[in-house]
Length: 305
Image (cartoon, rainbow, N blue to C red; front, top):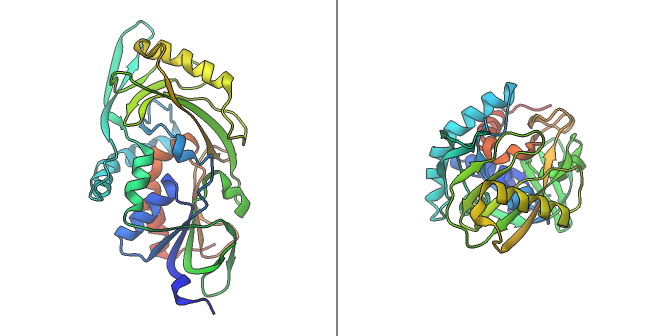
């Protein structure tokens, strides 16, 4: 029999931005929640920019509507998170540099600091560092198998980011790289002029000036010098005053992506009692509030595959 100390109402597998905010929202709703996080190198939230920009990310179709709804939810969620005493650096307004040299500001959009969001959410949560090996429905719920033994939950939320594919969902890794620069004046959040290919942006954060971002089909977490060179060029174009600034960090994160580019927020296709919240690609910070609300609704309904 599973020990009582290892039984929970809900276990969230993955404690990144999506997993932590899903768990935080469930906890706010009164659920008994445990987060099991493998603390992997390359987790996307550690390298994420934190831009909340549906238009800047050129979202279309169902993603655009979900992003707008999520953007509306962020201010209230920020207020709840900051009751922990951890500021998440939420800022309104994003500037877009125009081809002719002008700047257009979109006040409805904004930015925040993903590592601080995760830290704030975790203040209210029980988080255990464990590598989950398997999820096994057993008729009474779901057995969560780890190297240190089994846990048991009535329901499980799979939010393991780029590693979710190990649990039978179509998610793969897409590497993103960014630079953090030191000692640069506050520039807010800026997008470079529209171009084909990668979005180019810069934003001031508590940990430095963030310059992003690349995208490639790779699972390597080793920084690529060619990416650093390209990012330096982005910095010179968008923030000329950053030219020559010292690099504080070369960030590498593995974004979870799906074949159709849409997040998976639904019951697991083959595992009863398991719900999936992953596959957000480069839009995890933007879509986290609406994802958390959707998962709470699914668990309350008791929907299963």
